[in-house]
Amino acid sequence: MKTIKFGIKKDLKYGFRETCFGIVVKNDKLMIVKKDGQISLIGGGIGQNETHEQ
Image 1 (cartoon, rainbow, N blue to C red):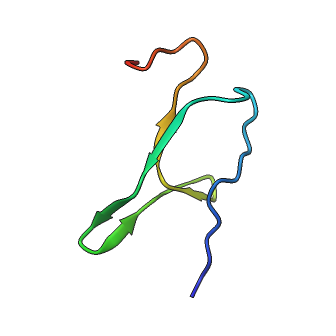
Image 2 (image 1 turned 135 degrees about the vertical axis):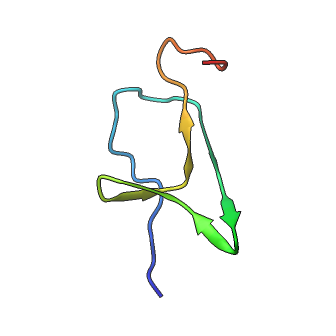
């Protein structure tokens, strides 16, 4: 079994920011995002000067 580490913080331009991530299961498979060799859960965060609605 392969172990995948989540939560590696590589972008420090925001300092603290509100984020939300979810676990999505479709057809008994865990859905994830892979970008630039990094694997993460589906989600995002609020940028500087950005409202919750944006």
